[in-house]
Image (cartoon, rainbow, N blue to C red; front, side, top):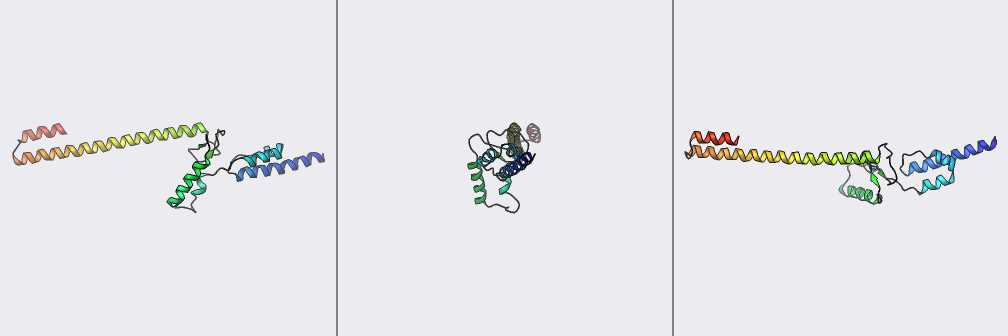
Length: 172
């Protein structure tokens, strides 16, 4: 019985230590049970995990507004912290290792990539719509200019009122 209690206490110590190391490295995973059952092995694996820097660590309200130099540092740090195959969660901007299928925020890699694709498509459509609106505005401006020119011709007597009305109705 005493051995069982010693084993449980020892497992709890390993579990808490392993879980705390994983939390300090920036992961939202619960490693208590890994540490509880596997002890030193789980602790060594937790120590070997790379540190994850969250997007919000650099953009918290106490550090805002960031200077352009600080923004470039953050961007460079994020780029350097991503290894081949790592992915950034679209929702929380956390960088995840390539073997991780779900982010700490609960969203999967597939959900994140689908949302990125949807966002990219929406941005393309918005740019196209804005371009069409600008083209329409420039066409309207050209139409107005033509009507003004025909009005000047009417005022100077070069064309008749009927010709002006006909051209105006064609343009509008």
